[in-house]
Image (tube, rainbow, N blue to C red; front, side):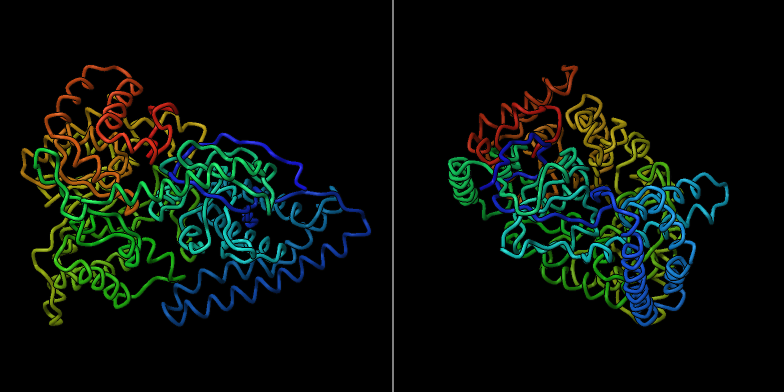
Length: 599
């Protein structure tokens, strides 16, 4: 009989209800336990480390051969540094000394060793030494997985449906989840617009984040009820609680089906204003979760997930086949493909990115592409070749300056000349757009609109930068205010400029999937939304139930307000007034943190 029964209030990041048993992800160092050992146990702990070293070396050698075979010997060289670390006798010597001194298990001693070397490398002025931190971390994590006898796949418990609990989920982890049995996600780190949260919503997986001490509070095998609408997590609840949420879960499924009735046509407002509604995807299979006939295409194809799944840099032919297949599947509908956007918390396991004090403001997006032109050229060639198979556009991420746009345009023109010379077909008029996610770009967007064919507003990063609130930090999630007056005015400025230049403008960030902010954006003049497949039904339901005049009148009221809470309440109450059923879909969003994004 379970004697632990309690409730946790977390940050709701992906709506829905999940019921299942906890499956712990043990691979993150922050979740590791430390325990005392006796002097007599040291030799056996060292033997465990030796076995882990052998296993890790074999894994890295296999990975190196794979990369050399499918990419190049140069790319495979990054693993030589990992093998050197594993073979260094100093590692075993230092870890043993720590066990002898502190009398702790080998995992704890290994983490202590890594922490000291990480601090040492980061404190040096030698750039090469600083970059070695990434190698050390990768090796340390691999050793820990070998010691714990866990692999990198995040799967469910053996008895079926599960709720995954982890300290943190990176996008590269999330794409590998066994989504057939996964019912929910609970993490300690992360917030409403972290990439893991975005992916959870994309797949319709209920999720909560910001649970402090998740590893100590939850145990593998615990029965959990997770409410992704309110953020409530019930651990080993009474049968009556489980039954109540089972009924609620079934009601939500019924409600979703009812809301979808009549939404088979293209999207338009109550007064007949046509709305361009597209979806955000990470892979071609994501289109299986939406009826293509009910959308206008793909407004954001996040290509970095193709790179994450490969375990190596995908070739031009491999990328071309992916882009071509999506374009053909859309049958003439729009396909906007964003070029590789890695950095910050989106990292490739086979590409060493230097450690940075503030990665969100560092080497990411287009900045990486320009410094790794071989990668950029391969992707651009694949995109241009795929452009003849549909209505494909190229989108550049993390643009900051006009000269970046001009540099990219010149490169694309040169590649077009190469393709002509090779006799390879492409659309010479392939549109080029930029992400508006840097405040400097948002407020000087007029200059950029002279250079590009369209713009897409990435509200996740734009809000993060404007509010100085890390979107992956649960402690400042309350400050990530999408309804802040500054955000309202910034969006108004961007939309007015785009309309003045007669250039298409869309919003592909999470604001486009929040029905309250959809109403606000509609009133500001936005007519192009790109959302996760999971949100097509509620967004369409809201748009079809309101007129543009209603939305515009609300914006006029909002422009007179001074706080995010006031503005959020204004739009949320109107949503529930016109489509009351959405309250059941999203839970008690109005009562909980109204200024934070909730849907």
